[in-house]
Length: 91
Image (cartoon, rainbow, N blue to C red; front, side, top):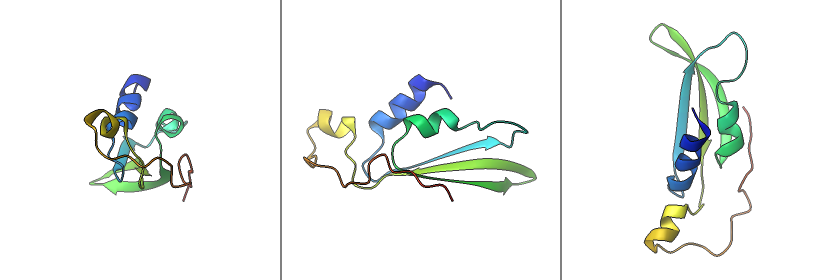
């Protein structure tokens, strides 16, 4: 996924949204490395089987984070963060 697409996802994701990326297992490297740098929220990764194919699944879970779209639409946005912005955990 390209940086511009990830930036747009980060911009519009709902304040309590979840993003799940899936990619076929690769012998080398992490197909979600750039997403882990760009996307906010708590992150977890696992390998899962979909039908007969193993995929790498990376989940980003947000909690009470305002998105830029909330601000543009005039929705109420908290004036301070929850303290968990940018925190990432790997399971």
